[in-house]
Amino acid sequence: MRLKVIPVLAALLLSGCTPVQTVVNPAQLPPATDFGAHANPMEWWYVSAYLPAEGLALHWAQFRVQDSRVPVPLMISHVAVTDLRTGQVTFLEQPAGTGEVTSPPLRVRQGAWTLTQAGPEPTAPLSLKAGPLDLTLTPVKGPVLHPPGYSGSADTGVLFYQGITRLDLTGTVNGRALRGQAWLDHQWGNHTDCRLFRQQSGTSPPRPAPRPKGRFSASLRNSSPTRIRSA
Image (cartoon, rainbow, N blue to C red):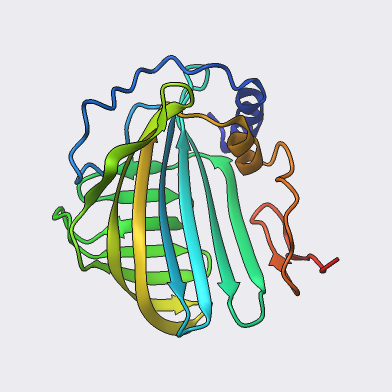
């Protein structure tokens, strides 16, 4: 399959958003160390950090969506960096395409963006390289299942929920050296939200939200960034 066809297939898939048939049993919890990919409709990995001493907050997320009508999993990712002093937000995204996830050691890739673990041990350091982020994340604590081990319900669908709640963070953002702490979360299961799918795929605009002064937005689908001015 040629890569340029993937966004078209994604749009067809996301416009339907049919009920998911995969069964997820919350009574059978996975091990806290299970960070690899799964054969479920929705899965994502994300790293977040709030760094008040550095005046920054950051977020990276990698989504992996599977559907029987599409022969390969679809990968969608984004990065957001917020300047806590000015309110400026930098947002970059990679639209639906191909990628890979292997474990152990954990390796998540879409295009040039990667999250890579240095070894098979659950507490081995991770390297995150995504857009402006070039970070080393060293676990201070081991992986855990967030009680009760999943989110959602029988009505909405269930996502198993695990993570590493404390990571020492060092590296650079847009070439600026910084340090602090971050956390890694990983969720997967049969919970699907059409609004989430459509917003991440670009098939519908997100809900209106207050825009901080001087907000900055950019997309990898565009050849140049776009400035969004405050109302």
